Length: 531
Image (cartoon, rainbow, N blue to C red):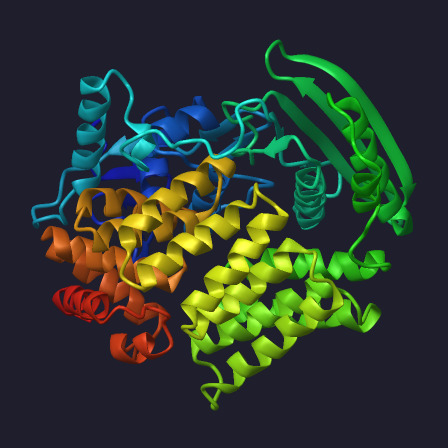
């Protein structure tokens, strides 16, 4: 089956050259990657296609988490009007993948000139590059292997994302938060090097793998934790922790302490006290905090407002919750970026007040210094931001987000080459760093005039968060830089749809890009794209 051929899928006509679905008088445009997923399923209609096969087909040669595929399936179901509980188009095969169950047939190709099918040319180029280098293409992120910064004899540990059992996706934020905080706890132990996992797979170089599951039923909480030796796959420790939800922090302390005792080496009394230290006395405040953080990471204006409300609820329950103050500060910094306040500088002032409050409550929390760095970055106080981020790294040498934000700052001040090196470290520590890591890399490569690498990373950022405006802007700029004017104008059209009346110069007023040379370069590219 020619993947560029218009297909009849159930009652819909699917055109992969324009990324459109049509029926009767209705036309729906879908994201390019979502259409590629649909075409991959259509090529094996009626058969189960594993998640791994779909990832390899649609995202060849690049690192992508399972979330990118999940979001593409969600978008396809929404466009097709499909119900996952009683599907007529895409059926979920438990623990395997997906199957297209609608009837599929070909249609004559349209006579009009189609939009350029650069995606397939890109796939061919990637395959050729992989073949010519014996398979060593470094997944489109970098051209040379990263150098380790930790001592070679450090014990390497990874914590896989904890699974949610029984409660459904509405409790996923709790499982993610527990796993994330466990990573933070273990990072405080001397002699350990923490490497974040990419999806459900343990990263290379991790000697010990921590995995587990979280189940919450009403006010009861059950957490299962496993420790595995990655060299031989031996699971040499497992334990179930079951308590009322109000004892969550007691459980977390027990998990951290138990894991520390199972891992080789000894922990000092100071480290024991650090492990026992919790961020808030209120489990409900912690729950609000985790829910707010999950929304904030989406980076949309409406989600930013909802996250702020949740952080506010957390602080009502615990007015000394430093991490909640830090997170609340970031929502005000992003409000400045979104330009939703009639007083332009007021949100930044409020953000700094809240971040400083967090530091006064507890200056030993790495996330507090990261928040200060984030706020200072939005204020274009880049030197001060770098100082705070270095403090965060001093407290947690495995803090991938701190390395990533440092990298972003270097691009803002016109030193994009330094960004790439710092992002190598960040991605080694957290291979599944989300859309922001790829956005930061794509920006840097664009300003370094490596347009091909810029596009690879910006497309990855877009696949992970298709609604992020900044990613779309840089993607349009990179396409314009490459001479793909039609594709660049299409992205510009999507930006105008997402933000009617959008003005690049007004947007630049609150963007922390301080390099005048880079500012003009970006504006020129966006002008070519039609913005």
